[in-house]
Length: 426
Image (cartoon, rainbow, N blue to C red; front, side, top):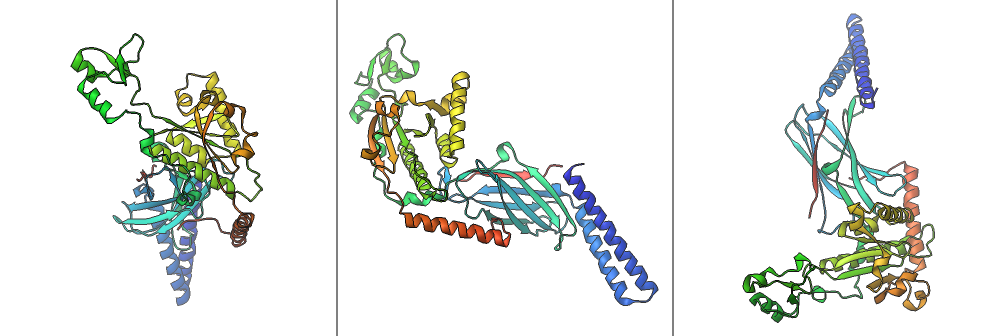
């Protein structure tokens, strides 16, 4: 017997008990001419009729749509907020409780929720904004939502849990330390530094159909995508581009995550991840092909979504799983997803690498991985380590808030756009 059927059976049992009590009091009060008992019995019968209306209310007549609220089009969000619209297509006005369950990747407790009450009438839409208070870093996925129709006291209630899957599942990469992005950066990689299309005079000569420094006669074995068809249309001769315009320069970011972290002193790691996300976004918007790797792993992440997921889900367990996936990709090389999103550090020998660390280059020169010695360090950015006093105050504040919530018995609740709409399925 499913949980939903058990809840429905309990609802009908409570309706029957209330009808029996109300009818008995009304009948006894009428026979004994006791007005107070008759009045109470009448109220109980009316209350039972209200419960009967809740029991016959069709939950499939409730339509819910959600839209993630973001301040910009970046893949990272500093907070998790979404707008919900609930519409009652069938039935009459009822008290509806909506509870959203979000799955947090890599967290022990796994699920956080937000509850909201509304009382729409038939044909009306209830609109409200929900949020998760003080979300931690991670990938949040809308796993399920629960709608409950009940009375004010909760004696009569009927619930339905709807799982989300596919396009109906909202997902958000939450990085609360995005506030650190307002700090000035020591690196200046504007879009003009990454252009590889040649000078304006060379582009005008190419448009006119003449061989330039970027064009040479076609040779057997050249890739067809390098053929300049504009030159062929003018000269009837095949020529290829020596520098492909579709190739973007690489921006390789090496993050030194080897930090002497204590149990509650997590602020240095959060600031480091925020700085890494900021530099990756800047390089991506400048037109570079961004690649990200950490000191504790030999896995390279490339692609905007893969980099965002790795930063917000960063942990020792997540890095170990990526390392295992890389080994599986070597065994099962036919998997295209692994070839596109992950690669080995062996491909970076001789490449230019940007380093992000809390240590100066003089302090970490001997501790770097062996493969990094074969790459050329283009720039080294040393972040200022947070003061111990600020870290201790931040940890004490978090511990105090958690203790207060436990003493009150409360759980966290919440009061460019991706949207999803849902209908309750029978």
